[in-house]
Image: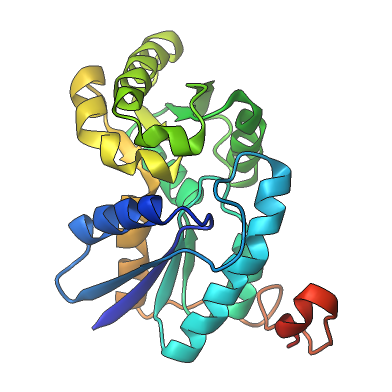
Length: 242
């Protein structure tokens, strides 16, 4: 059995449960999905400050997964917080949902639109599109101005759907990438409304992680993603000593 740990980097347990359901809905019957939130960190991630303070909790979950024999990991936040550091710690694949979603979007069309939460997070989405090599394919990043935890409000689904329809028309996009793991359950409704593929990074990252494990592909450890060099950490980070 393949074991995939899906880490919601915030501490909102209701969102973690929703993310876990979406991952299990697409996973193979032979895959165990372990959906978790860190024990420490912000309740939602909506700024660079939030993202920075979420990373230690993510890394603690990666370290625990290594002790427990987890095969692969999904970081279920569209900022892909701590992705490089997680790959240093993990022996198996670590997939960020933004990277996975953007990859998938380029396989089903020439251009995609990202629909995210708050406008202050749009810069991060553009940063990742450039880093992953998809900036030319990303035709726009649009904010619904709903906070992450506000996505649990039933009215949020209609607002996000309307914005997705508008984004496709404005950008001339072939697909929509949902720019928050909290939108994972919106796919079917948004796809019906827009008439284009709607991509949830949680689902794509889960299936991609399964595929890499099945292919026997693990995180390369020769260079940059080698284990961190041993050293002491102090204060609140003393438990992170390697």
